[in-house]
Length: 404
Image 1 (cartoon, rainbow, N blue to C red):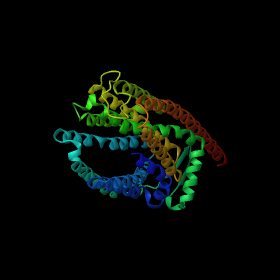
Image 2: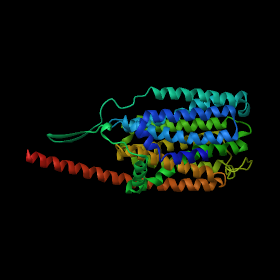
Image 3: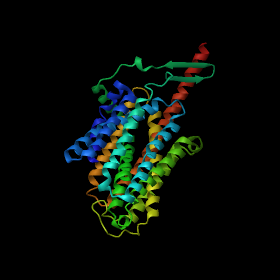
């Protein structure tokens, strides 16, 4: 996992140039092909092949996830970004459910060691189907993107077509990433982006790994890992549905409130992890007792909270990026968003093998609290800038009306 996240981090610096050259659709297609190669490698497993394909998967993941964010914003008309981001996040996380169900049935008859070929053959088939699906996507939105500023009895239309924009070189894209990272808004958001990587790595890697190492749980029921994955996916889907697909009803609470709900759920989940998992579980298999006896219902509830909170953070963060950065800056902004997450993932998978559970939960909790205040600050800046721009538009419209 550390190799995957490391190469994903490095690749993010070049991804905006690739997306600019071949478009979001073909970048997603190319990235998904790397996933097929990675899964095929498990059918002829060797250490060298695994490490090599892990590096290639990191490159493919950078292409796929950055391009999917660009594609989402490009194809979302005004007012639809919130809904569409929820739909995308729910679809991504929904894939965990059939995987968990398949794993559960598989483990009822065999163990993972004897059935890994069947497991990865099925996963490879789904990956090939994904490649075919990406090939069916449109290259560009049907309608030319139009920016419209409206004031009383006066309208200004400005058409921006991508063909009128000069394609940037790799060096220019790198300089653009550097400029964005040094800007006030993006520089502040970096801390929150790092937390998104920390919480994703913890929920999808460290948490399930700790469950597997807690022999009091897995000795009698190996399917507890599949149940935990299912609960995490269910939490993601519920959160994405509430704050994305049903955003008309839930957005009245405000984006800052949704991030606040995510913070509270994460802190509760981290507290439960501290209570039900042995402190040494990230380091080795253990029969040690936890503070309270680990029960399946607590494992499922903790997984649900991790997934639900993650959906709060990720959907609202992507919406903020889509609102703040448009046009040529968009691929670079999403690349920074993914770069920080993958870099944080590298750090988590490196220190998770050396830090006891309580220290890992402390790091995650600290970044969660800081991330909440960061979102709050940048949201206030963005709101003030939006209001000042609207005031300037109205003032110019009034002047133009007086001239006419």
